[in-house]
Length: 52
Image (tube, rainbow, N blue to C red; front, top):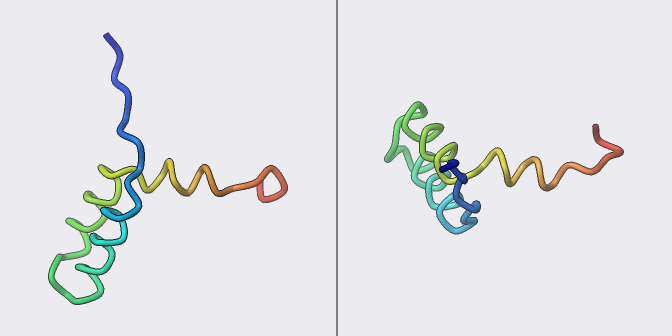
């Protein structure tokens, strides 16, 4: 049995970011939420071979 990370949910990632901008969530919690909801996978999918 292997672990498959969840597919990034853009609406959730944006919601976490907006909570942080409004000062509702501390930075550490925001980073944890963004990581859990797949921000890394989203960013990796946006990088083109030219950027690497």
